[in-house]
Amino acid sequence: MLVVLNALLPVFMLIALGLVLRRTLLPEDGHWLGLERIVYYVLFPALLIVTLARADLASVPAADVGFALLLAALATSALSLVIRPLLARLGVDGPAFTSVFQGATRFQTYVALSVVGNLYGALGLTLASVATVAMVPILNVLSVAVMTRYAASTPLTRWQVLGLIVRNPLIWACLIGIAISLTRRPVPAPVFQFGNALGSASLAVGLLVTGAGLRLDGLLRVGPATVAAVVLKLAVMPLIAASLALVFHLDGANLAVVVCCAAVPTSSSAYVLARQMGGDAPLLAQIITLQTALAAITMPLALALVR
Image (cartoon, rainbow, N blue to C red; front, side, top):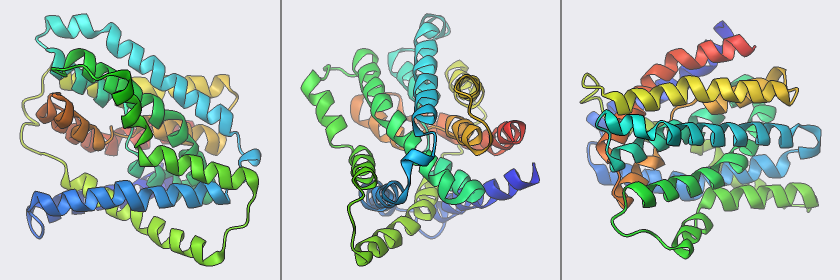
């Protein structure tokens, strides 16, 4: 338990620092928006490329880890849709439901990679990058589909949905990194050093941006939508993921990485999608903030149990 707490503490300290900086040194939204774009389009893709390019994917259970998390994401998505009528009877409208869906299914890659990197080093980063490959494309598709069905005033065409996926820099970064790893093509040392420098900055800056995006106001007015998203993401999805990981005979670090990736709060980029497509963005901000606060308790418990 102490090992897990030591790995998580720097992560949540950086998130808290981002929250403080947002309220003191850098209160302007434009500054954080610029940092978020740099992390999303440059720094984090560089980390994924370098990590996957250096990895010996044949030596790790990449397929089992990926399938366990993919199936967990699909199961949680299906469960979210199943409880949609119940939430509607509790006053949760279409745009609010899209925030519940995103809050229950998407995962915060910065937190996941930081934690497993602290716990398991290069192996943890490799497996968490595999998780990104497995979960990011399908969750983007499902989120856009749900937003189109329940929130968007004008439904997106299949080509517009495909365009959103194709333009996702994380997907491209994973594909490039895997291609380099599988082909074993030599990459010049200066290029790797350049990628390393960018990747090293990605997690710290990404966690600061995550903290800056938290909204403490409204946390005392928690409704059924927020409760549903928190329970599904922090309790149900990790339980499903752990069960599937055991079915695939994963244990040790492999099992812990699966549980960690399932147990992290939802992605802060989900808030951007909610704003763009007519979702309930203030509700999603509340969900992200409450999940991040509670994850400081639930993640150590979940990781300690599987360890």
